[in-house]
Image 1 (cartoon, rainbow, N blue to C red):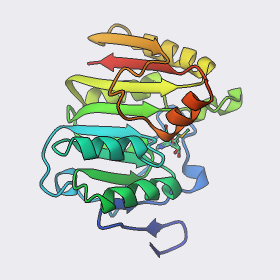
Image 2 (image 1 turned 30 degrees about the horizontal axis):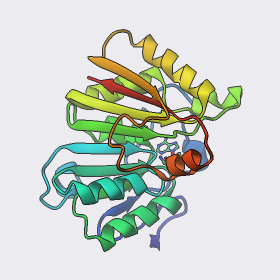
Image 3 (image 1 turned 90 degrees about the horizontal axis):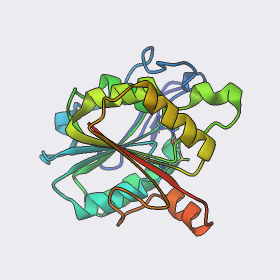
Length: 228
Ligand SMILES: C[S@@+](CC[C@H](N)C(=O)[O-])C[C@H]1O[C@@H](n2cnc3c(N)ncnc32)[C@H](O)[C@@H]1O
């Protein structure tokens, strides 16, 4: 990893790990938090990111170590998988695993998901958005930092192909109930909406690190799927 000016960092693992360091004051603080920020300057255009893989695009928001993505990208070499997280520390582990397995269909970008979705992804370009265990920010004064809000779902919907999916999971019931209310705010814009408890709706074969940990602890897990 090379470090440049203070507040900027750049690292690559075989070109699949792209990093744009965020300062603490750049964390989501307001409703449309992505509007005032910029993409990492060193991020290649989407069509150059996947070395000739041209299949459907799935994006995991807040991918952590990328366990789910590495599993799925290995099983589905014709699908493009993009992981985005503000934290590079864990994402680096996923990037190295992808590199070891030579997964040309898997990339990670360190930036804010809102910025990536709004400024990088074309409209109707994504087949699935995965949002697993987004930070619940349980204190009321921190709720403004939550990512799963109506405005964000509306932005994701713009970027989904027709028939595309949002897959979401959380172990935090109060957050889940707030998410239900945020989705309700958008009105009947979805072709379908499914909700389950302790039963993954999409691709049960692969799970995230938090999902496995919470399952092992016996916590109830709440899932939602929205279809455009
Ligand atoms: C509780 S962890 C879950 C990680 C992973 N999805 C899993 O299930 O194992 C939440 C992740 O979301 C990331 N995150 C929080 N806010 C984000 C944002 N605005 N954009 C991108 N990632 C974000 C955090 O850095 C963290 O890695």
